[in-house]
Length: 254
Image (cartoon, rainbow, N blue to C red):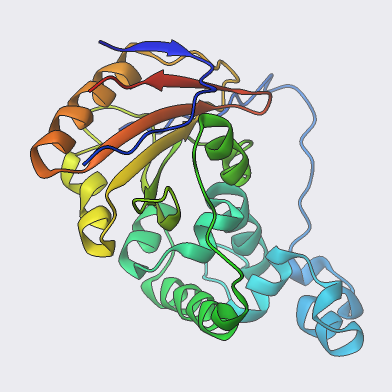
């Protein structure tokens, strides 16, 4: 049995079509997004980096420096802004599969490899400074942990993979697009759990519409994943629906 609520009790770990945000009235004025060639030389990412240091650059500008050039259809700065906006900061930095990044964001495989390699360098250099792993015990913890998906323009299903002490050992973008059984397959949800030795997973996805209530499809796929998890010994602790203003939990009963 599934029911929806704002869950406050701690988790207990036991032994296709894309949904796009509204485009609004087509008659409304469009904001012109400056391309790299439109910028004065001193405001271009590489020149800003040389003159003022990396702290002066936005994340999109830093990504533009890494990618260096765009494609014939997309300017490098426009591409970088789109990647950050559509994928989210945390997901972009944690993605380890270039092929998945290429498919999700429609970018060349070389660009996807550059982003993944750059992120891996950052993880390795800062690994020594880690003071502890994040702990997810409630839906509120999951909501706070996934702040980067609150305002994404597309639905994104994330999996937060936990050890026996509710510590996050991995998180991953499972799918992008409206959550349904055609997109979300149990193997995509539980593969990272087996790969990283997780004993439990908390699922979460955003609703760009701002409607926090889970859909019938959200509830149905949760039921299926709970049953699949039972068969392989991976607990699906929760499925949290996230919006800009709040969250709601699809409670799971074993």
